[in-house]
Length: 327
Image (cartoon, rainbow, N blue to C red; front, side, top):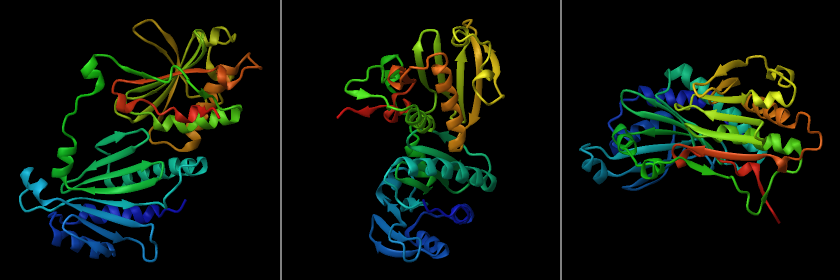
């Protein structure tokens, strides 16, 4: 994967300092400052080459004067500019691992340059957002790569309009992946750990992933309401049948905290800040797997049952990596 982190930070700083008026002429002034070449331009879109000689580094500016007028942004034309920060990937395992690390590094550098983000949205479509005086900046990542979006605040306000979730419609949470119809788990434990690792950063806000081999051997992952913390929790009964009182005997990390919930459940948990690097997620995945396997030397990955749910179905964890289609 090719990516220029410092170049991305410089672009974000340039956008943050620019005097945005969101007109055609104003946008062209920014292109010149950024050193971009206009490949194509019309009333609705401009295609921009951001790196000389690189046909895969094409930014896209979107214009909609009529829409912005309806939103009372009279005289404005530009909605947003989408800038790719990486080469386009095919979503294979090695690319996704590199993308996890890159997104964590980009987020850390953007935080240092722009300050604390206004919003964090983990998941398969990951987004970190900064609300600045004249614009909104979105750092995003998906299977095909990372990008920076420079957004007109009026357009972002329209994007942020309230939407009814499935939970609000039905009054219930959503549950997924209880039944693996025509699916099987990864065959080797190494593959299972890798699959679980790549699934963890894809958990959306206020979502849960529960792994178990019995009612007495359970591990739960939880992405917080604000998307800033991923937590692994191990209820005490999971230790009892393994003859343990805490997770230190199996998991290499020592930063575990004992908890007791108001319902009476107790156990141990630890957290990592999102977005994190791949190795942080892998440490959690390896710990969960080791606990589930403890005392079961002949256990196969297919024996692990999992449930994924969220308060909004759009945030339900993507567990596609945990199953492979039967041939």
